[in-house]
Length: 203
Image 1 (tube, rainbow, N blue to C red):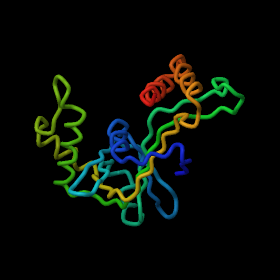
Image 2: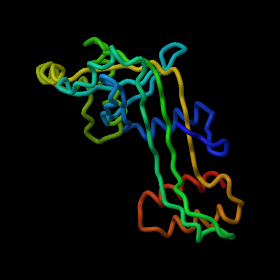
Image 3: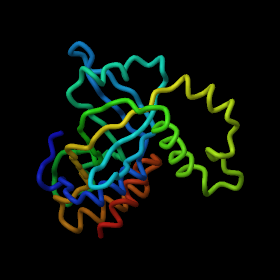
């Protein structure tokens, strides 16, 4: 990913938090030289000193079979994004687009059944534990789980390289920056309002 110096994010903890909050990612591998992609809920986990991306996909999805022949997988995560009008600047310029994006690279392999069960339990814990009637792994019937497990394939990607880009008008002066935030807050697009909230935290 091309990242101008103004927009590069090197703090892994900041990237880790971003991935946790924007965990619906895009997994890209290659099959016979052609890129293929699947959009999936994913987890970033730590095991001893290493980090991994984990997830699962339908057994009928041919992408998991490409793990053996793809030297590396690419996982992309995206946050809010918004059009930035140059009419919001003090001086004439061209419009642009603000966004947050993280790319993670590493080799992928499939999980065995026990590893898949553990990963699914963590996924349910993350998204269900705060609910009034949580659907957790231990609450589901063994027969249902056995049936559903036959239809999916779990995978793990060993994180080898991380690239983070937050293009949020860091190269603008304070007056322009504050005006951009104000203008984004007035937009009807929910993505624009989300970008304004993210930018406000940097003030």
